[in-house]
Amino acid sequence: MQYFPWLKPIQAAYQRSFSSVKPLGSGHIHQTFKISAGTDLFVLQEFNVKVFEHPERISFNQQLVLKGLIGKNLPFALPLPIPNREGQLFTAVNDSIFRLSPYVAGVCLDEVEQIQEARLAAEAFAGFIVACSSIDATLLQDTIPGFNNLELRFQQLKDAYANTQREVVGELKGLVDFYLGQESLVREYTGWIQRLPLRVTHNDTKINNLIFSSDRQRVEAVIDLDTIMAGYAFYDFGDLVRTVACTQPESSTNWEKIGVDRVKFEALWKGFLKGGKGVLTAEEIASLPFGGKMMTCIMGFRFLADYLNGNSYYKIHYEEQNLDRAKNHMLLLQALEDLNFHP
Image 1 (cartoon, helix red, strand yellow):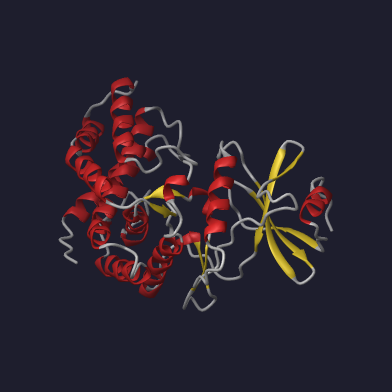
Image 2 (cartoon, rainbow, N blue to C red):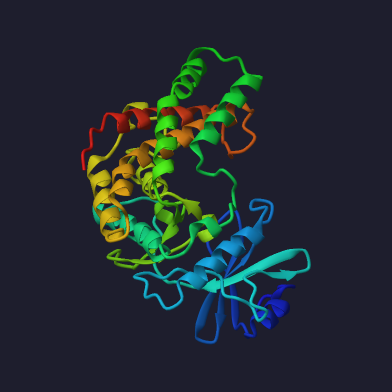
């Protein structure tokens, strides 16, 4: 077995003997390994504290969820970190921190290929909210402060516009005017959050944050649980709409092809209602279509603000990419406004 300087301390921390250690996946945030310990399989991650500056908050939230789910029979796995011998979810080795999680076999998808996959995805993410519904969401800590706060992101866009070094003319001026003209959407957001119950939400409901069975007939696990925070049901439904029901990826510049796949949208709707049955209130259900618009708008705010700030946050492959992403989301938001979906 290849030598890793952290191997012996990790084995001691979890009181296990590893028989093999192999690199897993191609993620860019955490260095990840598939671990064999006899017949048991695990995922070991070296946690990137440069991306997530508050691992203690992530650990706190995940501990809260672990305790809240004791005795519950979930329809999918939730591979939260395994406590070490000291009961901690992170293990420090020199200047690095690690965590060990159960390995779940299956298939990760980068995009929905069959309508059923959209329905199953929505059902699973709503099922996560239901599973955590007995947990007091007010106890959760913000792992990324203001992550889905539309008011905050709107103000950040205003600040970026006021301080930009770019010449705001032409297409850029049109995009700035469009997004600064979304006050009514921001007001609608504040109205909803004043009325809706605070939930434990996943907050990053992309299709590749699920593990499907090899035949894609069921969801085996909900993964990527670092963004578990307090939020609203429409956050998780909305990000599904943004990433699954759009006819083009978020960086696409095929402007004429950007729109809403209504069949996928309705599959997400049916799946989310099925997964949330008995827990989601009537008002929460009524808020879900707004979630698609809100999550599309908030990403438009963020992409445009980053462009105005000189592309300091999102990774880009060419100078205008964040501008193009903002235009992409403007077109999707307009398509969602025109969808005329009535539950």
